Structure formats: structure tokens, C-alpha cells
Image (tube, rainbow, N blue to C red; front, side, top):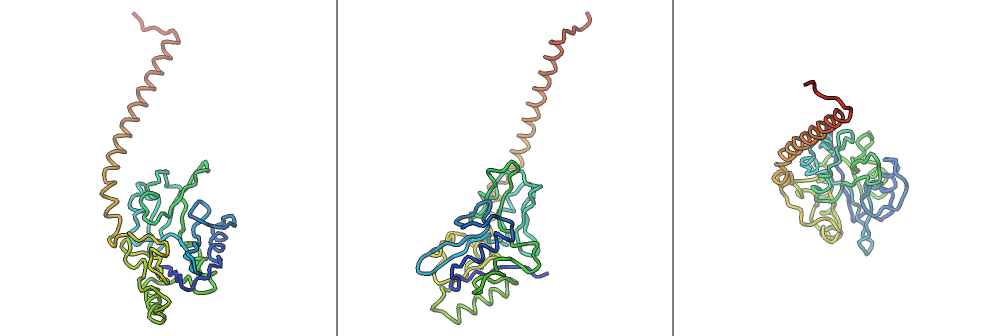
Length: 247
């Protein structure tokens, strides 16, 4: 199985928006001018000035913090590359939203059965991500991660004046399956620039390792409250019915 990844080449992006429109169509989302991540937006373009456009999407970390903090396994890193989501498992805790260093997962706040929403790299499309297929300028490529790293380095070497030498996602957060190259350093492209090179689950687990203890205590506490409430109602019913214990 080929482990799928995505390379975003900011230097080649013309800001046409074909990628965002293809994403919306592939995910049955209403057509709209996407400006940020939300329940109907898995990818969007930002205008960084002077003809530089940067597309944002889920980074599909190789060791995702969103997966590590999910207490019910609703999020998982698949062998094919994408970080996927199973809504039937989700309990709505939204730890993933807090843990993600790239600010990707969003929540259906207006829904009666809300889900976490994020790019899943078109996991069901045999031809690969719709955004890459739609790009007319090869600003978004999909393929095996090692091959994309080689292609990114080839482009940088071939046109050193067109690219800043940093390959974003190679080591950030322990490595991601979405990679960026472009004409400026990551901070100037609006990409999070303070992401450590070590995998983030090592940090999030330290913070959340006591959650099971808290959950267990809460379950015991609520169970006790439930028993007391029901016992009180039972006593009230008996007293209200006028029944008396035999003398």
C-alpha cells in the first residue's frame, strides 16, 4: 500500500481556488468563499500579498496529537496516510480541537448531532485527493511521501531564487504527510512557526494521562447521585400511596 501524502508548492499557486471548489464538491459542502476552517471548509486560501497564496488544510501528522488525546478512538492515523474520523464513536469532548497545533479540527456547533469536521484526504477516492486532481498548475501534488520530498528538493534546487530552502512538514510535529515549499519562510506564509520537531503526543499524553482517573471518579459520583435520586423518588411514591408497614 502506498502511503499517501500531499505537497503544496506555494510558489506555483496562482490563487485560482480550483482546489477549494473541488474539495467542497467532493465533500458535499455548499459552494462558498472559504476563509477559515469551519464545518463546511476543509481547505482554504490566504492571500499573503504580492501574488503569494497559501492553501491551508489538515497536516495529517505522522504522529497526530488529535489521535493521541481522543479517549474513544474516533480519530485514527491510517496506514494509507490520512488521519480519519468516525463520528459514531465521537462523544463530543473536543480534545482534538485543543490538541491540534495547526488549529484544524472544527465542530458542528449548530447541529443537533454535532460532529468534528476536518480534511480526511479524500480517503474514499481511488484517484486521490480532489484538490490535487483539480490543481491546474501542479501547486498541489499527491503521491508517496518520500517521492514528494524528492520532488520538493528538486524544485528548490532547480529554482533557488523562487524558493525559501525550508521544507515545511519534514520535521514539524515529528513529521507530517502534508508538506509545503514556497518563496518565503513559513512564518511569512502564515504557517505555524513554533511547532517543535518532536512528536506532540509525547507532550499531550503528559497533560491528559490522568483523564481516565477523572472520568472514573465522575462515573462513580454520577452513579451515586443517580441511586440517591431514584431511592428518594421511590420513598416518595410509597409515602404518597398511603402504604404503611404492618405493625
